Length: 73
Image (cartoon, rainbow, N blue to C red; front, side, top):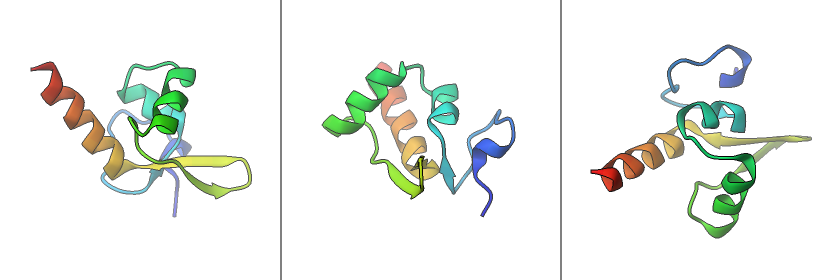
């Protein structure tokens, strides 16, 4: 399976695993705030997919974006 960060992402993939770099293209947050949110449960769970590779499910990020949009209305 190809990871989303292998190419420049202008749209969020429907499925798969994405890097923090890709996540931050869609959600404006610093790395440290992101990791604090992951630890507290505010942001989606991270998955270790290999040595030194942590990714997030695209579906979880889509749900978070929707939650943020709803809260801003």
